[in-house]
Image 1: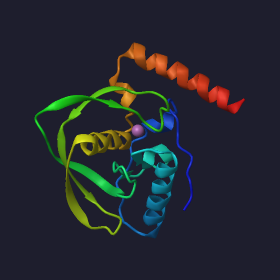
Image 2 (image 1 turned 180 degrees about the horizontal axis):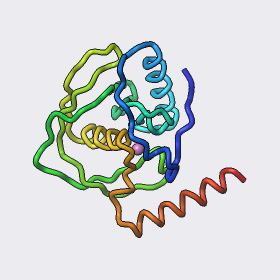
Image 3 (image 1 turned 45 degrees about the horizontal axis):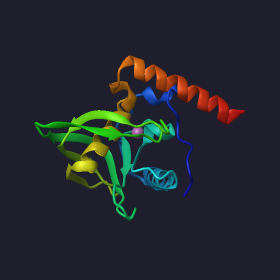
Length: 169
Ligand code: NI
């Protein structure tokens, strides 16, 4: 298992659209285990392959308190969304230290392959539903701050660029 570097907003590679995974093979299973290690190391609840500069449709999630219920979604597609939406506070490992409100469906059903290549449908609500929608956005090249006003987004961009400059010095 390896800890992979996580891209930070506003890195343009975060806006690449991921392609579907044709075969769930050992290369993908190694990527899954590296992404889980990276997510747990960073104390995150979700990580999309896009964030580690791999532009393929794969996300890992664990919203459990005990950090022992990993969920692997390969080629995820939303099969159903609730009529209701709510504002939830979100953060992102690619935008460290920033939290803000984003409107998401209350509940979703997502069809995806697991790391064995088996297809299943996951019925999610609450934090898991929010997390799935956030991670699936990453695969489309979308970061949650893009839902915020241009003014807020520009402030966040400036702050991130300054932080990254500071980290390099
Ligand atoms: Ni994120």
